[in-house]
Length: 130
Image 1 (cartoon, rainbow, N blue to C red):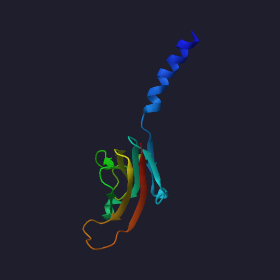
Image 2: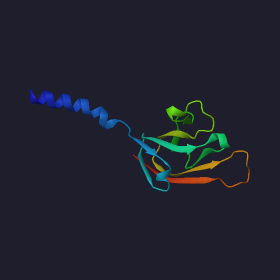
Image 3: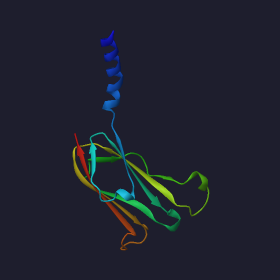
Image 4: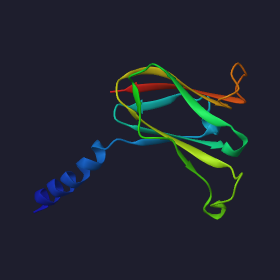
């Protein structure tokens, strides 16, 4: 009976152990090394104020290692729905596809201001392990 119970518990725990984990980064984490396993989900949440024309854009050096999952989502606080000029949080999701190292850079700029430096730049070195 004890053996069947142990086998049952292990079979229930195994899928949880095999699931990919999720890592969330914010601007406070900028510059810190990010360690992922192949298959992990990486979420980046950054504050933005699109009413001022600013937007984050992402540059990944080391293509093919991460895949962006869907479009960027922009969320504001529940209490601020429908209010113009309210800051939002931009949410980016990526899946770790291959083993290797890359550098992620997020630039906060106005897209039409060509040649102007970004208002903010954030970097993350990322290592994906098997």
